[in-house]
Image (cartoon, rainbow, N blue to C red):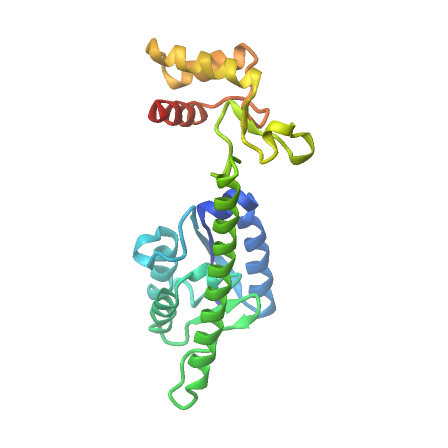
Length: 242
């Protein structure tokens, strides 16, 4: 059977896991092979929340259209939470797939059985699994928020990745007056930051600013070569803050 592989990673997951799509792709391939199916197309939504409906996810919309048009007879995902993070969205997507006769939904745990009026427990059990998964995600999110609030209350940096030009000192390297990890300036990045803002003030383009930084040996916070998109983010953050 021909199936379409669907991959999704949210903005937060991209930041925390980096190559989430690659691991999903491997799991999808394995699930398709185990079921004797062939992946004929890949559709993905990068940086999009699973709480959004299919209409707001171009990749998922394309996958569903392939099934409706007969180009694929099912969809394969690593887990159901790749389809949706909300129960109502999950059920709407499953219903859209099952509108096509004999269409299948596969996960790394096996096929998702379509609803059967003679076996109502199928749907109930699926909903229960989704509810408890949602509860677990909510509890994890709450613990993270509580931790960030506590750290912020003590003067530490708790707003995600540090802005360019600053760093949160690792616990073992913190001085007595910075035990909770408040941001400290990074000398070489501060020099680059001043250079970026100066060039921007004088009307230089993003591309020319990036080229100047590379030529002058100013690295990004990750040590790589500066790109126009990186320059744009730095300028936006600092001009907004100003």
